[in-house]
Amino acid sequence: MMKYSYFLYCFLLFASSANALGVNTTETIQLETSQQKFTAGETVVLTFSGTQDPSILLYCANSYGTTLVSPKVQKNQLHYAIPTQMCNKIGVVNWKLLENTTSLSGTFHIIPQANPVSLETYVGPPSIEAGETDYTMLVVIPTDALDNPVKAKTEVTIKRQFLANEQQEIVQTNHLIAYQNLYSPQKSGRMLLATECLGLNSKEFTVEIMPAIATDFEIFAKRSHEYADGNQITTFTTSILKDKNNNVVSDGTFVEFIITNANGNLLKTSGMTIDGIATAKMLHPDRAATWDIQAFVVGISESNTISLTYKKVIENFTVSFSENNRNMEVGPLRSFMNQLIPDGLQVTLKVSQNGKILETYQKESRDGFVNFQLNPNSCSNGNYDFEITTAGITKTIQNKKLW
Image (cartoon, rainbow, N blue to C red; front, top):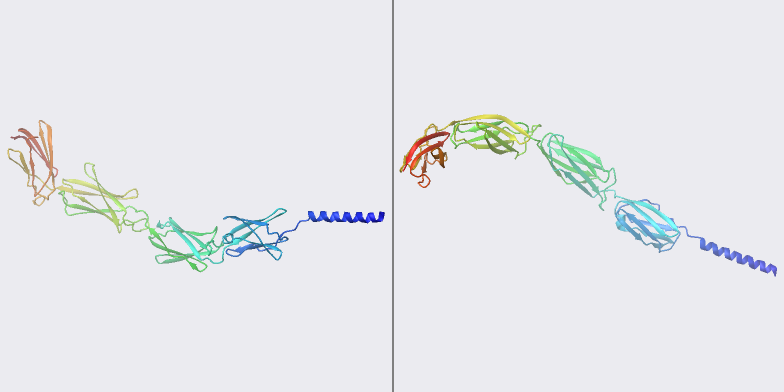
């Protein structure tokens, strides 16, 4: 009896021990996929062994977002197919298996495809100044079929042509791009640029090499005669404006001509360059004068100073009265060859009485004469003084009676 009881006790103890081992034992989950790098666009499947529980999710995250992936059970393993949007973009993908008793996580890399299909090329600024100090930057981003930049240290050939010179330079991609600073040559003109990467060529780009700022220059004057007739035109021109590298400045460079007369008064005219030469015009003065002329590219360069003298064109003129002295005729006004002065010469009349100016009239000559009609409403009967000025000549008539 005691022997039977002993065997029963041993059996129950063994059964109890076996039950406790089954509760505490857990499955060991292992990653079977050993590949760490995948090409963009390639199908990525992570395989795990040690469990067949389809409720275990895989958490995935990259720089574009996060997602949860459900497995498929095949051959006693869990297969997690990574979503296409994560497989198409290069970078690091972090994953973690969401299983309560197992902390299993890791990373894998998506790398770009081997050959680019597009060259994103940017050039700027589109115009630079000649002289080897200014530069434009060319930036190239070779990308694969999924718009991923190619791997670092991929060689990019930069080609440029300027005048009779052609050059090629090789740069390598770094931080997703390749770039080069292209300094301007000394001459002005048009530079053509293009890029090539692994047999793929970009389109042509253009950079204008503009002349630098103008250096000092000379001016010249041309006129039909030297008389101050107030009718003819004096033409001012510059020498060819060039920069420090002997390039002709850009068309449209603004040149200002400043004219100073004997009284210190300033006149101004201006012109814009065409083929490096600026031209400006100024009407002759209507009285004897001396002009000092200097031109400026404002804030940049200046010319020499030239001097022009204009002789008076009228030596004398006559004044006659009629109609109770209320009609005054000035003329004939004759020029340097005794010809009638061209129309438009200004004549000024001042009417005064007892030293006080009552009226001032201004008219322009026509056919060599100017007529002033004195209105009885403003100039009643009485004695008046008249001062007539034209072409820098002043004639005074005193105590003239009007009735």
